[in-house]
Image 1: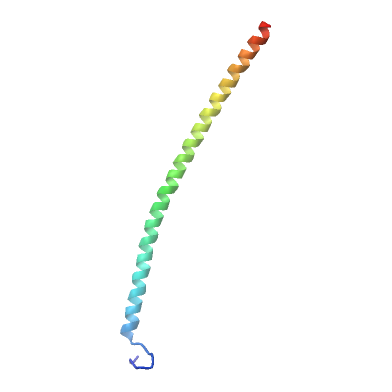
Image 2 (image 1 turned 135 degrees about the vertical axis):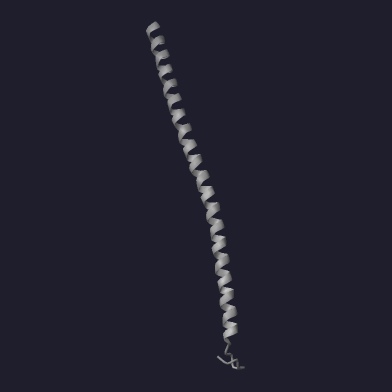
Length: 82
């Protein structure tokens, strides 16, 4: 394409624009990779917290069940004494 004053562009200018777009896409890919790493790390922390919370909940439920059993035994003993 010849370069003229009526708005036509040359192949060199098109090449520059394509190179610019290529760089933008590559940078976007790098940014996306970094975001995915950060997101994966956050998701892993959430999963670890969820597992810990479930373990704590299970332990608490068992402790409360034992405490309830103990209170029931004490109440039965008190009832049998009076």
